[in-house]
Every structure is written in structure tokens, then in C-alpha cells.
Image (cartoon, rainbow, N blue to C red; front, side):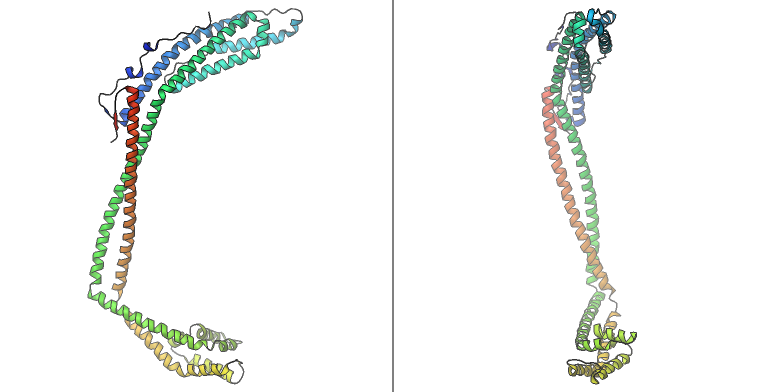
Length: 429
């Protein structure tokens, strides 16, 4: 069989995709209809590819039959070795066996015609792997073949060159197929991207609807709270409670001033308290600590006599010299002032306490109720503000994505027009 048995069918013999695919009658397509149309276009291109590769396969099968016949002939032939060549007999026989086995295996190769784009890739890869294996086995044993099987090696070379031509044609056909198919792939990817964005738009719109419902609920709750606040703040009960709260605040302010005055008065005795604190009982130590840190507390106790006795004992210790102080005279003056003022100070402390307790006995729950309403209104107002911001964000995102989808579908429609020769407008529900 002579080599280079290539032939090409005229392009006019194979109908183009534009001529073979029935296009929708309407000029407005859904994304699903556009995907179906792309699938039909690709199916036609795959059929065109399969038709072109069928001719390649036919020629390749013919060549592989020749190779199989050559392998059978090589297998039957007894290699004649002369003289010194006899020592190479085992090498030659091994090479012949290896080549024959490999050629017969490759001659039985199946090349299924592609039914899809992925099948086309497999067709080429299978063809390439076959040629690689034939090339490797013939190359590694070329010296033996050329030296001892010249009759067969030349024919093998012709068939190998012929198959190489077929492989190159296969590559060219599939490259052309890939180029023709690229707009279909690009358009399909655009439609998939559009569908993903549409799904995201639906989620944003669903989220926006939920937020709108939440806003309605919050606004309704706010109206109730504000109405209740207005009714509460305008009631006589609240007015009386407000007066009581003001009285309590004023009384507590006077009490704080009284505590500060007592604290200042006792602060002048701190060094005396420190020097007297050695070797005393726990009760005495506790009383000293109270007079040092919170001296006003002694006036809220029922009996101040223990504190009076302690102050008198400290005075005696200073006066007799048992406690040595740098400014003992001044400390003694302060001690005398405190000792003399104890009854009056206790009376004033008790009077302030009674006054505060009497105001607190009044019903001021309504004031706390009002504060609770104000806090709830503040919290709901903050939630309402955030919800409105979230709603605006969801709407803005949905709007931006819709614009992106519109641009994508417009470009996809232009590609479809190039592929089919008919103008389409793509839409989504």
C-alpha cells in the first residue's frame, strides 16, 4: 500500500453548525433556551468533527492492518546470520520478538470516534500514545532492524510516516474544532455565571423581604413603646414619683457631703490610730479600721459607746505620752472636737437616713418603668437603624448584580448572534 494516502473532503460537503441547527423562532430566549441552543450547536460541531476524524480513522486502520501484516511477516521470517553474526543471534531474536509483539499490540488499537468534546481529546491522546510507543520500540531496536530486517524496516518507516501525517492532521482538525468551539464555551461560561448571580440576586431579594418584615415589626413595637412612654410621663403618678426621686437625690447629696465632712474630720487622727493599733483585740482593730476608712458608719450604729471609749483611750494614751506624736496638741484638739460632737453627728446622720428612707418608701416604680421604656426605645431604634442599613445594602447589591447579569446576557446574546447569524435577546425570570 503506498504511503501518504491522505485525502480531504471539501468543506461544502459537511454542513456548518449555522446551517444544521434549528434556531428558535422567537428572538427572545430564556437562559435555559440559550443553553439548549449552545448544546445543539456543540452537538453539530462534534458530529462535524466525528465525520472528519472518521476519514482519519479509516486511513489509520488501513495503515495498522499493513503494520499487522508486516509484524506477521517478520514473525515468520527466519533471520539469516553469517559468520561472526551468529554471536548476535539471541540479541536479534529478542529484538525481533519485542518489535513484533509491540507492533501487533498497537495494530489492534481501537480509535472510537468522538461523541463529545472530551472524546475528541481522548481520540487524539490515544493516537499520540500509540505513535509514541511505536516510535520508542522501533527507535530502540532500529540498528537491529536496519541491519538484519531491511526489507521490513523500510515498509515500517513508510507506514510510520503515514501515521505521523494522520496524527498531524488529527491535531489540526481538533485544534480547529477547539477554536470553533471556544465561543460556545465562552458563552456557556457566561450563562453559568449569570445563573450564579441570579441565584445570589434571589437570595438578596429574599433577605431584603425578611428585613422589611423585621422593620415593620420593629416600627410597630416602637409605636407601642412611644405611646406607652407618652402616657406614663404625662400621668400624675409619674409626676409625684419624679418629685420623690428629686427629693431622694437632694437628700443623698446632703448625705454625701456629710460623709465627706466626717472623713475629713477623722483624717487628722490617722497617725494616732496607726500607733495605737499595736497589740490590740480584733474588735478594737475593726473599730480603728472603720474610723480610718469609713468613719461615718459609726453614726449609723445603735450604740456608739465602744467608739467613744476607744477615742477616750487614745486621747489618754497621747496625753500621758504612751503615744508620741509630733503635733500631739492639734491631734488632741481634733479628738476633743470629735468626742464632743459625737451625739450631734449621730443625730444628724440618723436624720438624713430617716429622710432618705422615707422618700424611698414612696411608690417610685413608675420612674423605673419609664427608664425601662426609654431603654427599650433606644435599643429598638438602634436595631431599626441597622436593619434599614442592611436593607439598603441588600437592595444595592441586588441592583448591582442585576446590572452585571444584564451586561453578561447582552454579551452572550452577541456571541449567539455570531454563532447562528440570528439576533437574540436573553432574559431571565
